[in-house]
Length: 363
Image (cartoon, rainbow, N blue to C red; front, side, top):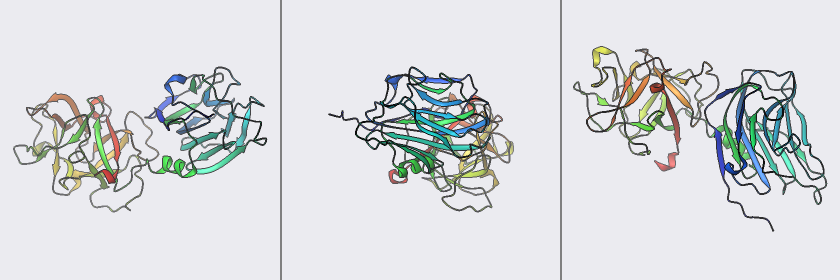
């Protein structure tokens, strides 16, 4: 009798990390969602160079041929090589998929495996790319294991590149679920979002308090999302036009419209006033619309700004006209909120923010 398993998934790596051939991330079996007869893995990957030998993306198991699941890159051209262990062979799966991954390009990859369906499927950028089917369905079975999951180097070398949004599921994702994982996590023009200051874990918001010249303060307040006050809409830069629903590339200029007040996330120069504690440039929620509402969105701590903005990305927001970045710190104002300003070049810890996609139906 099959054991009933509740559907669970875990995101093991969120923000982009850089790995080389000797790097690895290891996750123990007990820390992963419990698997019965199906699993899936999705991830985003960007290669910096091809390896001259086999290069491991991930491998679960205690030995080289205990390998459910396992995804490898072929030497030199980085074609996908997807494997698993069966009760009739320790090396089942797809030998080679396509002509190989291009360098310096982000890919979304999904590996889905089911013993009940007797198949392994691979998707790239949301599109079905190849499969392997078990032939003798009455006698041949996938063999799962309780070994650790290695991302990068395991019993062979890893890869040179970056990886993020590595998710482990205890069910076989359907094709539409793979596409959702690829597309629907992208933040688009018109998306509702919240911004969390990573160091203090507090949400960017406003309480309607004004600076002496009348501008409404932007502050950070609370580590739990307030759907009334913490939500912004991603909009186009001042004086430009974009299609609603189009993805947001990194290193482009955008704006943020506060959901509750319909005003805009705004900063300015020193002539318009400074913050009360740090004497930095003010950040306000301003009901006008001009170039001071424009922010360049970048990956925090990375020179690579290829690809599109996604839910959970760690970012910096650089103000176009004053050449400083959105900033906060643990120092509190008299009302207990956290001061927000424009300060720094985007590379200091206080410039580090996480962007969260908000479901429209919850607002």
